[in-house]
Length: 149
Image (cartoon, rainbow, N blue to C red; front, side, top):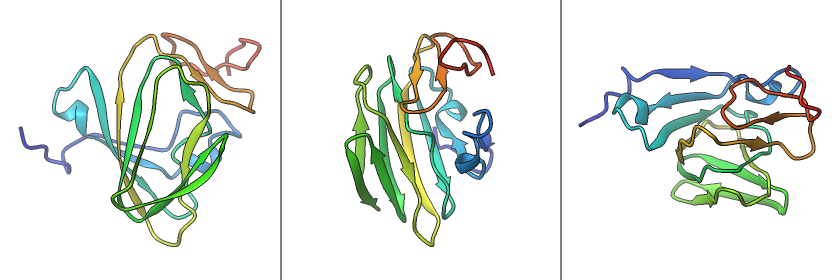
């Protein structure tokens, strides 16, 4: 089925609590997979204005992730270092492999990235270096001591 991107749901901003929300407030995702009725994996078209991040540095316990830069360029930030990804380049992150990652648009132009990932409802997300976690099956972010934000 052809996907009408204009009719697909858009998600702007982030659910991160302050102060972790600041670099992601202007990110925008067009939720393509959901529009097509996909249930086993998600597909989003991510738009990052200059200065905007895809997320905080993170890794998933049970969710594979794959990103493909459609246009512009982003900096792939990982705990191991940084690499520039330009249009046509991609990266992947295996579930359960510790090591945070995120994309940052440090350029002067918008970057567009296709994101794909499994949609495991029991996924947990770790955010190295900050007081933030998402526990399995939950939608509420928690402090590292387990108290909710």
